[in-house]
Image 1 (tube, rainbow, N blue to C red):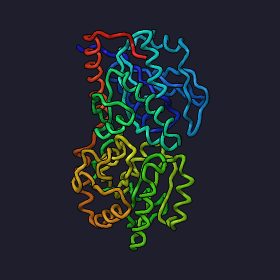
Image 2: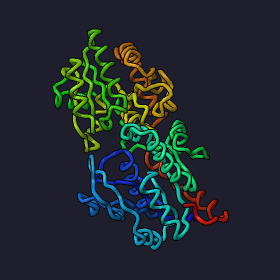
Image 3: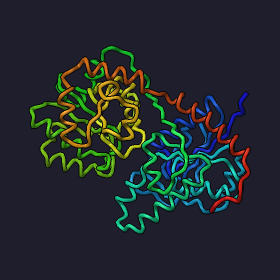
Image 4: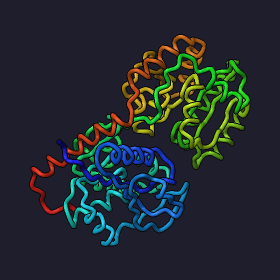
Length: 398
């Protein structure tokens, strides 16, 4: 019988701060504690925390302040915090961010060597390039992140395409592809008419108008302008539709302004954050297509969420989100241009049999549950630990 492991799941933020990585950690913690072993979330303090709501332990170390949408700035430098982690007797440390969390785990490893895995979820060059104008400072930031990556005993990515971002950070070593799962259940009904009617009533959408959705943070670098420009082309061709953006983000105000500028306010709806997962699945089920041209996302979890409702996605060729998608079979692939998106949508949207067939095949072929995903990760933990224990370790690199 395999030993039950005690796992530290670390990230630079955790709930109530909402983003994709925090969702990943939540499901890891819940499933490991319920079915496999013990998991503790390790993260900076948050003044709005409600950790009593979770059926697992959350260890919070000092943070200096929060910014943006509730992201704390962690301060992991006090030796006492590292000693706390050592004294909790973890079998493995799993960092989900190569910034403060990985730096913290490096400090822990100076006291006691513990096998460490890093999942590289985010293409950090997008954030760094958007915020830092100096090339020299950008390169320094890349180097710092690269050092944190190299200190992990094993590096995981959620898609092969993420390797390009790792190289930008200076990491060219081996990695393991560990896809994320989906918590939404498969919808096995033949008709989505009831769910569609709910969304149509909520947003006053005429019954037979096509519904497109985007799900994610509202940030320009997720290619949202491409979506809006493609919708403008469809409107100019006489197409009626509703394009729904589900989420919030720092560029929301600018997106509203641009929507008004290109005369799309009658076609575009910004719903805000949809926290209720059952309600979110209503949107997926009601939609004809998920529109997701992001090159930023490393896994495209929303593509699997849409597949749970047998809703096909329209994706950019060679993007991470499009990995494993076959055009016209499990989704639809375009070039990264408004014209290509508009052409593809215009070509397929009236073919309901095609949309249904592709959506069903997406559900059958690309959907992966969190149970399967986390079990794969947990099995890999044991391999990392066994390899670590069979290898001599020099003084920890600092």
